[in-house]
Image (cartoon, rainbow, N blue to C red):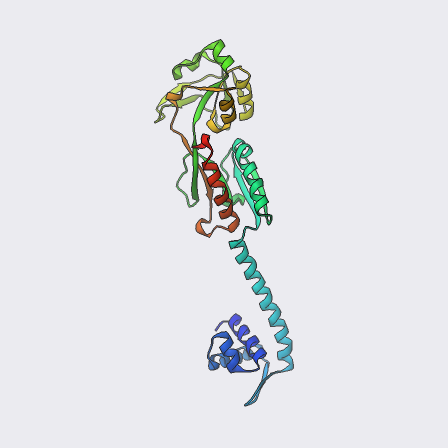
Amino acid sequence: MDRLQALTVFVAVAEAESFAQGARATGLSAPSATRAINTLETALGARLFTRSTRRVRLTDVGRSYLAEVRDILAQLQAADDAASGAANTPVGQLRITCPQEFGRIYVTPLITDFLDRHPQVRAEVLMLDRIVNLVEEGFDLAVRIGHLPSSELTAVRIGQVRRVICGSPDYFAARGRPQRPSDLASHRVVSLATAAPSREWRFGADGTETVRVNPQLSVSSVAVAIGIARRGWGLCRVLSYQVGPDLASGELETVLEAHEPAPLPIHLVHVEGRRAAAKVRAFIDFAAPQLRRIEILQ
């Protein structure tokens, strides 16, 4: 019998003032309860009970020890309850990482609604256009756009996006619309200056058609590139969700749709699988259906 069980037996016997009744309260036989108390007294080097044929009474040492043990067991129960609550009730800090524009457009509205429903949860959203290591950097959840490498992460698919080339109606009226990828050589292109910028753009469902572009302007912000295209200066290549409102309003139009690469999947990923904390499970259950209903992510 372990020490914790022995302490539980001690409290039960002390409260019942009987080995037999204390044993029944803990689901043990009377001999097992007696052995537990004897072992405990031997380890302590002190008598906890005085025994008679009719009654069991605490010694002075036993009464002092009972108060301490009750406090220890109460603290342990409180710790168990807290851990169980964190596993079954959304509580604590939820740390999410996602791409900047996806976070601005979709995650921010979702997280504020989620926090309204779960006031015991606090949230931190880090919006970065790079892959964050969830374990090493201490995040609970990530939005990943693109094909996922093999890993131990649990992934929940929420949709897909297209890589589109777009421009304003004024631009197309002045400069015409490219009919094939090679036509981009005669158009103004605004590119995104990423950590590893590529001058070769891939087209086609299998991505085997490549065109080398020579942009006149590179910027580090997706929003800036879209804004420049919206003003009619040139074309930009972005993900379809990033220009959803512009396409809906007609401020931007896509070209070369027939030559687009295969769509990119979007996933919510986390580390713990089925053992994920309630805050993670609750957010996925709340966010995934709403994201799947967004037309441009379908």
